[in-house]
Length: 263
Image (cartoon, rainbow, N blue to C red; front, side, top):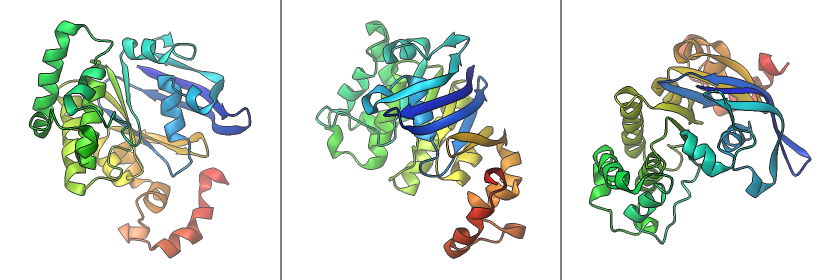
């Protein structure tokens, strides 16, 4: 469904954020993209959705294809019309608009006749939003804002949903509710999901396949179950050492330099 081949992204013609990154997202299920801060995860999603330009980012090399269509020269609204929706890190809601107004904005590429139906589907997915539909989004909790952000993306009726750090800054119970909804969208609705998440344990539990991004390039990939058993993933992303023993942060500082894929 989505193919990224040898992608290189540069900011301000000087800073290389993604270098020779390649990955393949197959239709159906959830694919996770793991990596530390600064690994290039968010930049990769922005490149796919065509929104690098506000930060003076450019694709210098490589290709991004969605169902055979080259995305690298397309405008963001054209990419949305092809069936890709992006929920950015930090949610980026219009805080002076109500919940429902934010959702309707997300349907700007959708036929008007479908907007009411899409709204009802989102309220079924996130029931608590229905009672908050007239509330200004700036007054919502972090978890409720994340639900609105996901709902806004779903208004475009995407075939690929990209989520950037959906659990960031929200309460654990809300994170569980959001991940339950994402699993439902993928399992029952057949939606393909590309998930960026620093919480590796949460991401690997939810996903079918996963990629690890380090210093702008993909260094590991496989099924999520395989990566859960990978020694490096256990140490550097799950905080586990031999026999599942948890590591302290002091230990992490010492063994980070041992990453075999960076040697």
